[in-house]
Length: 73
Image 1: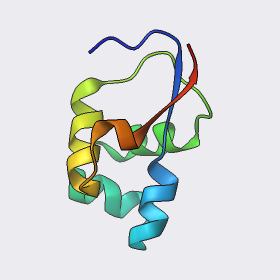
Image 2: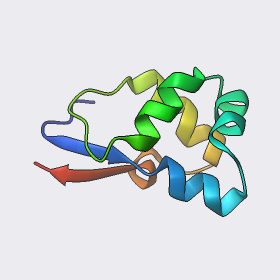
Image 3: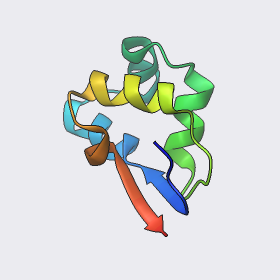
């Protein structure tokens, strides 16, 4: 999957819906805490780790399309 442009991951919103902290998201997903924190804080990114996105989507029980927001194409 190649995304050209800028994306934002909706980690904070999805974590809030479940009542989880970013540390809990990290523990549940197996994605390193600093990566989760970095992805949650950045308003836009051009590079993301697809494996981490897949793990996070699975942890939140959403499709990748529901986790990734395209900011700019």
